Figure 1 (cartoon, one colour):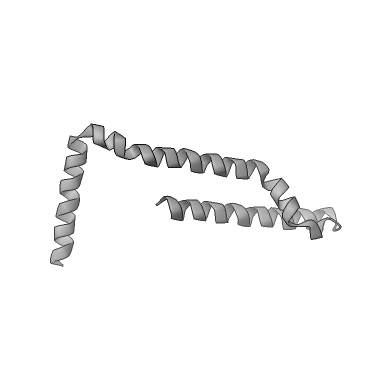
Figure 2 (cartoon, rainbow, N blue to C red):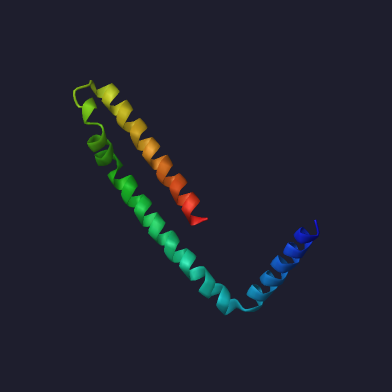
Length: 93
């Protein structure tokens, strides 16, 4: 329990230092902002091209009726988007 209190004290001292030196706060945020822009760009391209990716990944559904083909491709696109979002969250944090 003592280590938790020591850790909280170090956190408090670090926060006081960072907010006392605003220049270093901005410098420290720069890599996170660059990464955020890159992640947003990659996810935007994925959203823009998800229908082409789904059609490429599900050629077996080309001969199906329109409803079944669309359902499979929408499900595939949803799984890919959720996986991409999960990967972005796990690797960003």
